[in-house]
Length: 218
Image 1 (cartoon, rainbow, N blue to C red):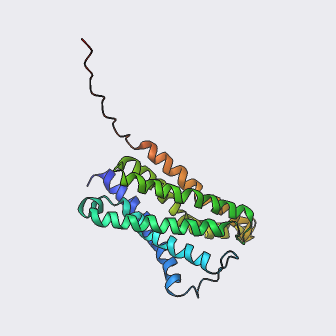
Image 2 (tube, rainbow, N blue to C red):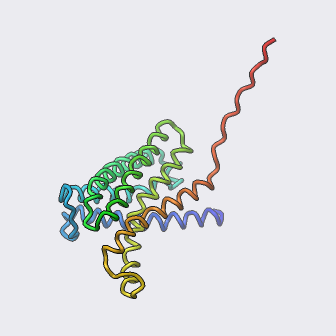
Image 3 (cartoon, rainbow, N blue to C red):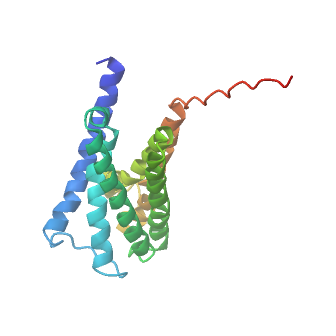
């Protein structure tokens, strides 16, 4: 393995561990009946939030493995079935998230951030699925990167929450949780999407087939 390959694998491994960890944490609450998760949302309570947590947990657990090249090469059937599970989980999780977003107890600013996340998450994922069905794998890769960047927002949100708490205790920002959360609702996914677009810009564009030469009329 080259140094570049080792570096890419190390980055993937960190992302996978964080994603599976947060996804597993979400699924832990699902399997324990949410008794350890004292959260609520007035919209379709309790099922709206619970469906969102369950589906998003599955999406996080599956998403990183869609980018594992050895899995795609050696077990393409498994890759496809995991991909279908990821698409279904993102769609259900995104729709549930969008439904409950604007009734967020953290206020309209936070709710709007999460609502826009859902508005982008579902179609990006479906575009990735559609391009795979058309065997347009270059487009499939790009839309999957965008989709997973939004899925990974669940991870960055949980990384940012303790940072905001520490900054609040230090007096650098207000210590009020809602004040921080309304910004984190945007900071959890907008930078992810920007990084994804910058990475996509570095990918080689697929070569267009050259038009076949036409014979000039005699």
